Length: 105
Image 1 (cartoon, rainbow, N blue to C red):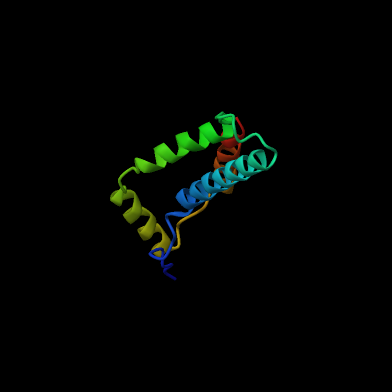
Image 2 (image 1 turned 90 degrees about the vertical axis):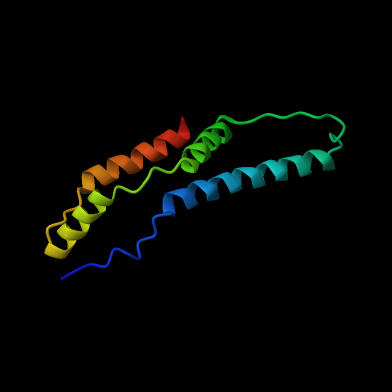
């Protein structure tokens, strides 16, 4: 049984990073709005949280997308079509944990 991998959304990690960045921007706008309501509009001050700085770094790294390794794509397609492709659940879990941990540093 062949699996169709052509419809896999390869932009998910990039979209997730963009969603997080947008949330941080929204929180910053909300904070600015609260300051204006409290009469603090006369003082200009900018401060970035460490999370915002990390998100900016992630955004930069996403901008420099690595080229597609077509040989690897073909290997995976062949393995899928033969029913021999196996997912290493421990490795996937480790990578997910690494990603989440990198956002918290």
